[in-house]
Amino acid sequence: MELPNNIVRTNGTLNDQLILKTEILYKGMNGRFVERFYLTPSTSYIFKPLTNNGQLGKEVWVHEHILPYFPAIFPKIISYSISECTDLNWMILEDLGQLSHDFNEESVLGVVKWMAWWHSLPLGKLGNVPLTGLKPRIEEIVADVCVKKDEFYRLLPSLKIEKALIDAIFSQLKRLKLSEIQVLTHGDLHMGNFAIVDNELKILDWEHTHLNLPHWDLYHLIDMSHPLFPKKITSPLRERILESYLGQVEYEVDREAFINEYFLFASVFSIWMILLIQKDLVENGGKWSAVQLNTQLEETVSSLQQCAAALLL
Image: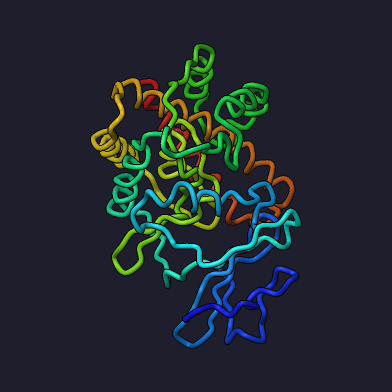
């Protein structure tokens, strides 16, 4: 069924006169809603306005320049509009149906299989891939954490984190030399951005794709916490995930150095996340409830403790 030409009004909103019903899926960072809309009881699409003003045009660019090299593991764009006026930016994507966002070993190893594949793509044929995504690069995160070192140490008693673990992290940060490997990354690969649909894995929301260290995608998959998608990670599972990745990626890598760098990367990223979550809690949460933020905080503290402990082995 073809979409009517006027399915989106000139003001960038759905034309409700042509739509049977809508369902809100989630609220973006700028307050706009991503929705499922039905033209008939059995025909539906996803309407996605620009949800982060800093990502203007990026998702369409990725779909036109990067994803044509990919197998069908993502929802396709049916129609779109790009405008300097952010309210007039939107996409309509195919509706994959009801999504199951489960964090279990089978689904995560399925993501790792494809991640190792897109990390191995030769960058020369991909064009001008963005150099930045949604969050600061790890170098900026390290600098920010170092500036706020004393602030974090003051939190240790309330977080029940051993001082020796954090001492080890900051000791290694002094002589940190990051790998120079740069790969194509999804950029925001938390649990809400991959799903099982009819027993097939799908990877969603590619607007934050950029060049970065392999650890960026791995951290978001394994140890990044999210208020809407709580999960539990253990040290043995983390090790199996990393080993699976290293067994499938095609670029040359020193296994021991790579894993040690991951533990340090994850530790400092988790410190940065904890400081952000604490700030949100002090400021009454913003878009997230205190319950969601406290669950996210507990999860991030657990990941930090596990990764920091691995650095001491």
